[in-house]
Image 1 (spheres, protein in one colour):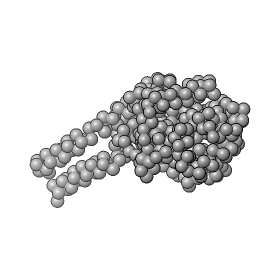
Image 2: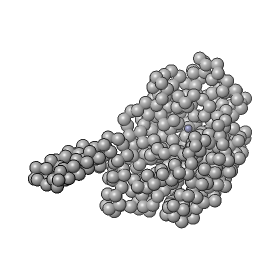
Image 3: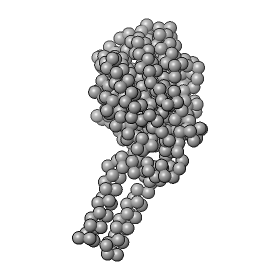
Length: 394
Ligand SMILES: [Zn+2]
C-alpha cells in the first residue's frame, strides 16, 4: 500500500471515530453484565377483571417450575394499576375502586402469593391507566367511550391507545401538556396508594404507554421511587395521528435522569397473542447478551386476560422460552428489575457487572452497531479500508 493510501485510510478512521465519539463514550460507560439476564416485564396487572386470579396463579406455577444455577426462579415484574372505575359509581372516575377493596381481594392475594414465591416483583404502573379528568373530557364527546366505564371492572386495554397515556392530555390530538402541579399531585398520590396496598414505596415505575416528562420523573423521585423503565427513548405527547412522538431524549441502562431516577431500557417484546414464540425470545437474549445488557421482555396482561387473551398458549410460550433459554445458556441469571436498578445505581454492582476492560471492549461493536447511522458509518469505513488494501495489491 502506498503511503498516501495509508494516510487516507487513517484519516477516514479518525473522522469516523470522531463522529462516533459520543456514542463510543456512552457505550463504554454503560456497565457490562457478567452473565446473561432475562426478566419478563408484565404490564397492566392489578385493577380489572377477576379472570386475573386464575391467570396469576397459573403464571406462578409456570415460573416456579424453572430455576437458574443459583436456584432462583425467573421473575415476572407486575406493572401494577392501582385503581379504576367503581362499579357502584362509574360516573365518578376520580374516585374509583382501589386494589385493596374487598371486591379485588382475590387478585391481591394471587399477586402476593407470587411475590412470596419469588416469581413476581411489583412495579408502579399508575393509579389508573389513564388520566381521569382527560378521559372524562374525551367521554363527553364519545358515546361509545362512555359505555366502557359501565362494564364491571373494565379492562383499560380496551380504551383507545392515546387515552391510555396518563401523563399527557390526549382528549384532543395532538395531545397537550398537563399542568405541572396536577402531575406532581397525582404522582405523589399513586405512590402513597401503592404504599397503602403493598406496605412499601415502589422502587421502580413504568410510565403507561411510555409517555411522560420531567415533571413526572421529578415527582416520582421526590416520593421515593428510585428507577424508571424506559423503551430507550422518552415520548412526551401524542401526535395528530395519535402515535407517541419522538423527542430525541434517549436513555441507557444506569443513566441518571434529571430527577435522579436510574433508567433501565426495555425494548424487546414477547407477546404470544401476536404470534411471538421461543425463537423470538432466544434471538433477543442472544442480541442482548452480545451487548452485555439485560433482556427485559415486555409481555402484557392482554396475553393472559381479556378479549384477545389466549391463556394456555401464552403460558406454553413462556414455559418453552424458559426451558430453551436455560438449556442454551446454563449461566442464565434470573433477577428482578429492582435488583438491576440497585446494581446500576451502584449498590452490589460487582456481583452483576464485569469491570475488566476486555469484556467491555468486546461489547462495544454490538452496542454501537444497533442503529442505522452508526452501522452505515462503520460498514463504510470497513469497506473503504478493504478496497484500499485490495487495490494496493492488485
Ligand atoms: Zn400499560
